[in-house]
Image (cartoon, rainbow, N blue to C red; front, side):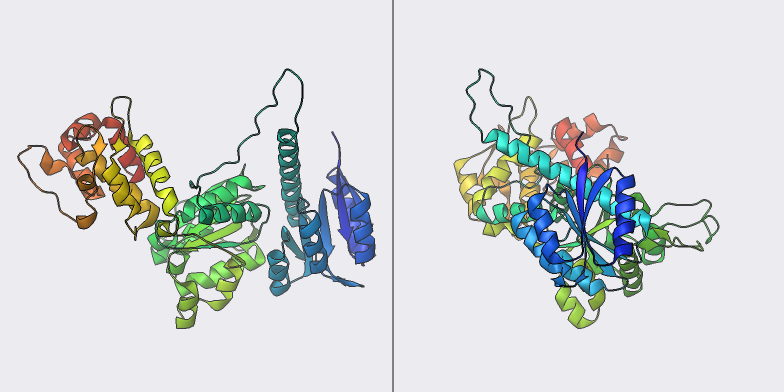
Length: 458
């Protein structure tokens, strides 16, 4: 197997020697340069896998090198070596396209984690390049070329706004930089975060999503950082926190704007120091976690109002990924609708949209975006007849309508919104017999399972 080759760019011989020894012990060959001019020559003359560069160099700075590699050899991950505590420099490097950063004095465990992640990404980039090259080469043999493996795509759509979003996601997956996903409710912020994770070098490690607004304030520190046995009343054993659970992978902070100010301070320190201290513990422990955050609120406005810390805003908003609302991608509406209906269909019930339903959906503004579209179609499948959904089944003019009793004895249990309370009532009535509950609700067993999973009742 071909060994990887790393380029080290630093004018301090001691740092170069330390990096060379560390990487050689990881079976990685090295080349060293003390300035940008030598670095550019080594880049042109060799097949470099990864690059580690200092910020300050005799003939320029490392960010120039980061930008150059991004322009000419974007498949090479570049990590910045910055002075301890100089987060502004690290953030500037990340915005310029650096893969990650490591602070001086170098901690070998952190350095090895960074290099391993960079090598994984370099291997992924090389594999993708080979597949694309193979797919683009015409052969005259009797055996057809194998189909290129597809990238995981959780966000569906063919419109220009979603294409631009997917393009930016591909770029973000090549970095370790914190990402802030902005956008209205229901636009698919968590799906975007998952797709960044699945395309990244961390894809074989955990993706841990957390709704910051759903954790009680008094339990927040313990939930995020864990606690030791006896650290407070009820702490009967050591407990792992969300940061430890996400170690090596990605921590997705959904609705990050809902964090109280006291927790924002602790989160800022964890991000800056790449370390956490469990409640009751005497020592900090290093963590290797990529932070992706999201909220439907205007964070900049909250900073101006004083309810969100400006320093934390700058740390999590290194790169912003705006999610387009559904009304800006109308050509995707029917594609999404048909995908949702396929998921709701069974072998005996194949749901379809009538022409008037299609026209209605295309002319609707969708204030709740993709999530609203999915909920509308779930409701419509319980109301339609003969598995054909018409405009009247979409109930767009009265989305908050209560359950109405009709001449059909089961109609009292046929929810238009299918909320969690209604489902619980019906399940309790049938003593949690799901088949009986589905029959009482007038929906298929598969549809009920789908709804239970979505509402967290499965």
